[in-house]
Length: 218
Image (tube, rainbow, N blue to C red; front, side, top):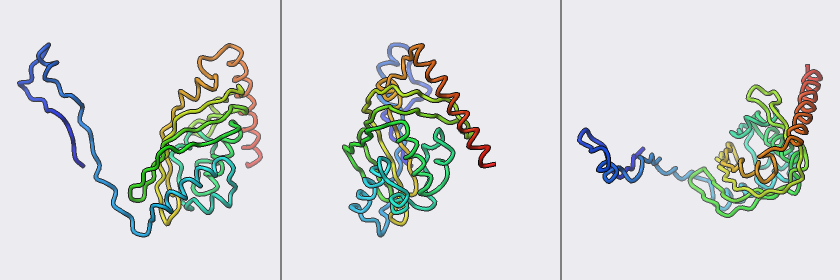
């Protein structure tokens, strides 16, 4: 690793007004060495699989995810998703897709930029949709935390997705999303008293459904 910085401090660094004039222009930045090229991974193939994998979240089935997802693939964003989405492989990614489709209709993704480095593909763009179903948020322990009642409002928010590849398919995913922008556009914040009541009812309903499903599995 290399550290990049514009200045350094020592015991003789002045304080007060003179310190402001000599303060570093930027804090230290950690720079990781570039990812090495991975033999056998063609950039065009990686981009194609990436686009198809994102598209599968909208309307893909299990066969689609099997073709695009490694059996040991993990979604690092699934911690607040249903327990079925926290496993490994295609079925877990399909569970994430079903979770999104339950809450959002008219889903679409726009990819503005794609960067490929070694076995990693990064996309930047937007996700759009309409909040027409209950969005259930789960705790890390696999219990229902809350549910957002549908508002019928549309949204478009920035997304960046990171997909790591193994054997030509996705083996790891994580993302950076504008969740606050989603909450504001979808009408979750600032919440009205009526919306809070509807969310409380939706949460109670989701907890009962989760308990019933757990009892059925027991």
